Length: 108
Image (cartoon, helix red, strand yellow):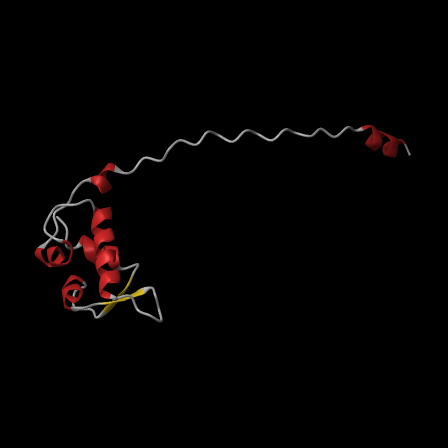
């Protein structure tokens, strides 16, 4: 019985929730903002002007949507036309996850 009395006397302390650290605005990697020059094959699709990598990918997606090249059944797949087939190394279809890998071979 003495143990039961001691347990009842133990006071539980409630800890206050810790304040979340202040979030700072995320900075973009300067290497990704640096303009790169597209190769002749890539320039056929997006134009010859140097642009940051993010803008190049954005322009390619604009081209894909404008031409209706995204597969209707499997939206992750991109069906290549003649211009994109050169860019994709001869493949007739690539996954959207492979897109940046193929683009990186055509920038300087």
